[in-house]
Amino acid sequence: QVRLVESGGGLVQPGGSLRLSCTASGSIFRVNIMGWYRQAPGKERELVATIRSGGSTNYADSVSGRFTISRDNAKNTAYLQMNSLKPEDTAVYYCNAGIITTTMNYFNSWGQGTQVTVSS
Image (cartoon, rainbow, N blue to C red; front, side, top):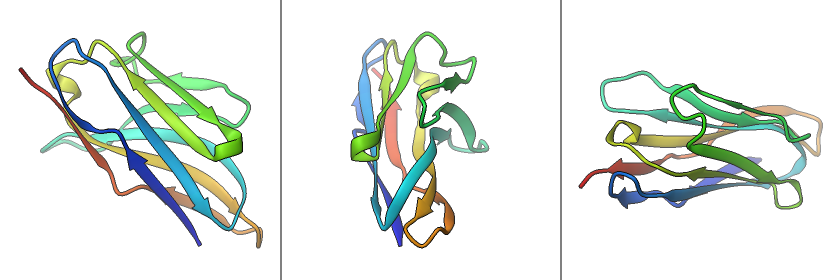
């Protein structure tokens, strides 16, 4: 009924920037919290940043001051602007959203993931 699609990953040099996008589609009544998580090889998935529908944000300490999460509620889209990227930011980045459907069901939805590689 609902789907999250991410885009914007790729290969970037240390110190560079990337912008990820995540769009929710389907029978959506409202999208509540949206967030980005990442999983590096051999590590557990970890929170990167979240943003509530009202705009309040939360960041992992490791990305605070370098990454900015934002959203466009009219487009059901969240963005992650990543600046000053480091090799340790290399991971698969996943979008997550709490979605209420038009039938008043709640889904904790995940995107398919997008690879971000920071390397010279």
